[in-house]
Image 1 (cartoon, rainbow, N blue to C red):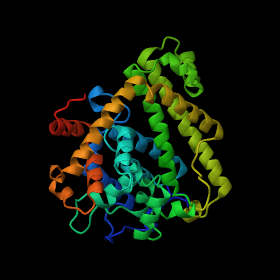
Image 2: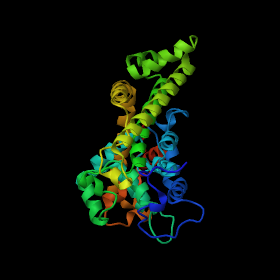
Image 3: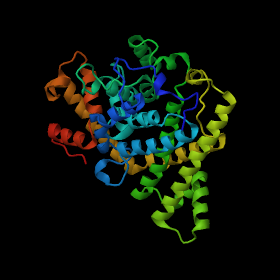
Image 4: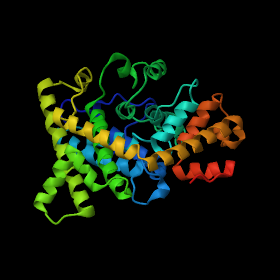
Length: 375
């Protein structure tokens, strides 16, 4: 299917930071996708968790399975909207590369530890991974991805960090945060697919864990609608099959809603090309009704799952692990790998090392260095 005129066309990419000859059989975005899949940081995602820690169960989502789900949803929507599927997939697979072990608890601890030393943002860390920390090529650090993929990876960025990035790369991936522009449609789509995926799988994991009862989901209009639809068609449905059918219907309806709302917005705005997209308000979106319903679902998950006492207890232990690791490394750089300890920015070296850890490596390292077994 041909690309829409406002899609990111790999033939018109803004290029890579280090010039390379084109690949003979792959587009620029396919090449990005392949480099991400073969990276060390991508493999680590299999042992980095979302809400539940890796040892709590084999079937809970990890950062890797989440990234694959985002890529699947994103490609499905991109195909219908005539956007570049390969770019969507590359952004989706890379968007969590900078996440710490133990989910958002890890990010909060590292940001606290890095206070006064530049802070810590996981989106910025994802960009740092693909720009600097991966060391696979003889001619440059990082993966040397295309501008459009890097732009999509940097989903959020504080003004201070955007200014620092702009100094290093004038007119680069951080410029839009300073001039109020939007990223390309493929990046906008990944942002939304990310939200759809984690809402759905947190319902699944929450019920599977026993922290949320299926009956509680009746409180949430978005879930209630598809739960009742499923029962109306399959009256005897219950348990896991009822949960899966409800989530399947909810996912499908959200995908169709994004396609319809986004196509309506694109038809009305009629951007001539991708640069025209950047100067518009976001064009890939939910309908107002679905946005309100999704927001209500997020509020429910925040109150009933993310702030559940069992999750909070695990979070406190995880925070202790990372806080104590950071303190040990900053006070004794010999505990860091040689390539990490030989740097002028000791705090950033510690943050990079800890952010790259998997959950289970962080636990093993903490036990080795402190003698404590918190889990």
